[in-house]
Length: 233
Image (cartoon, rainbow, N blue to C red; front, top):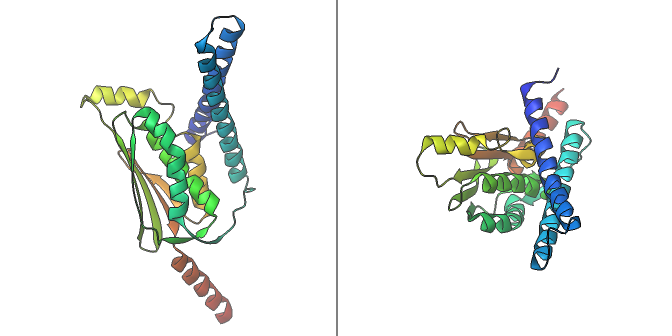
């Protein structure tokens, strides 16, 4: 029997795969029926291309999620500065943020070093930021922070929404989202954080995601303690 989390994930996956596909099919049907002409043809092609790329991204995320669940996704561990992957993740989200009228504010310590896969660490950040951009109201700001605390690198992404103050409006916006509105990108990011020996959590208000990954120093100290225990044994 599947639990509630499985059901939510299946619902999210279905939504993220079907939504762009429906847009593609709808515009193709309009083109074939001659319902689009002149300058609108180029716009139709742009919409089809954009949704095709979105569909491909969702498929890649679904594959990654399946590989994580089956233990078949391997990561390359080496000392890396997470801020470098974070910059790439922010750059990848800027287009969508501008289209929504959302700003991205970043404050990252460039010297934070973790032991992990630089590409997958960037993917964790990208999934978190893309989700926050999608959930933030136009005129709002996504605040991204990378800092070190208690042996961990902490990446926090907070949605500062601009709303009219009406709680019913807020509730309606949330209910319009599928599941918790997080999407496959965050599910993948959570799995990747676990593969790095860390976690990804959401605060009680549902506005902040926090990913924690052990710092290089903490990993080396743990490995040293393990080696000493083996020698003592």
